[in-house]
Image 1 (cartoon, rainbow over the protein chains, first blue to last red):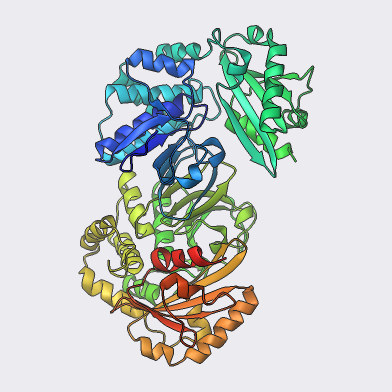
Image 2: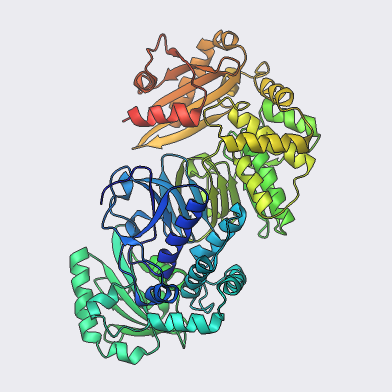
Length: 310
Length: 310
């Protein structure tokens, strides 16, 4: 891709989820409305859930980029850590960050950084639209609402804050949708894994983390039918072991999250696979375990591993 | 100091300048107005310039604290790097950061982080008051205005942005002061070094930085009379050499900034003292040099050293 100096690229994390895709488009629109030349792009494939929003709105998807040029101006949304971002982020110029995650960020220059402890980046963006007095159109409202529904599992995730819910309700009015009807349809669309291979499923939404030199991935998919996923367990294990070798990982945890019953069933592999036993108070049975009432990677799965690894 | 669990302590960097002191008080007030229990404290002595604001307003100074307790909830203003903060920041819980500096920040949990590339923390706080619709009283406006005047050297520093100026003008109206009259009096108060020893002068506003294992300090004072400061050069050198030994520094640069002519005269000492020659295109004469049109530590002094050290 050719570098366009005056254009700022806006993107979310690799293996983008609905919040990363929608927030990049919503942020690019905010910049455009404020007179700045910005464009949303994406660092990975669009999943079935996010696809539902594009079909619903009938709008174009952001362009996929494999990499960014040195000196490219960028805006990060829904992430701030280099491990989750474009490969050569260190050579880009980060102008702004809008996020809602834990932080690990260094910049030897001043920039705009706005993060809040809420359930979704779009919730922060809603407040920025209000602050800059930029109109939230029906399409923009639908995008923001979709991001909040997705990140909070329709307000059922422990990551959901009262602010996410209040703002989602305001957005639903502008979007002219019933939250429960629209939200359930959106989440269910994301559970349709019928066209994916196990290799693809574990990469739909996986994030790489590092702690004290240890490298681990947590992959997550939503499902309304745990059993049908675990029928293919042996294929998932093969795919995961490939990933471990390829990426030199100490641990790979794949979590299938039951969005109806709010549990997650995991497969844990790698030299540090039994860290999950201590992390969640479970016993692995043939590499798997059921994590009751655990649905959030950020608030529930990740802290357990970070505390017990190393 | 006893830890009060429900109270959040708000503070700026060590060797606090006017922005650090005023922004901690302005932020604590914002939190209080929003129903949160917060209190401004300070990590160091109040300088003559900041003293002027307290005398002008006839209000109480924040309490000095030497250290914070483990688990203390804190809000950082006007800084984010651990080296410039309370010694045991790593054991505290940072709830929020409001800042306008370069970033080097890690938190293994979600938090509120707001930084903008403007000349002063108070400029960001003004926007937060507007966003939360909290009244800016005459006293609060005077505090914010003082911080902006101080950090931007009455809009003459290259760190000053159009936003700082526009907001300062709005604040001056609420504060019912003429910016130039008030601002000049404030800056001049800061140049009164008559009661300080050289040891004290170099510590009025010094910041510690680290790069690739090298440690250096840049100290800065404002003056309207360079000559009278450099009369005491030999005493400054002794004090600086003491600091270098005590803190194991590779470089100590002391800059006296002429607020009337917008130049800085420096003393540079330490094993890496001649890094400043490359950094600013000057030749040290008996450890000193005049840096023409250089007044900003953040935008002008620091980048030069970071580029050439190591």
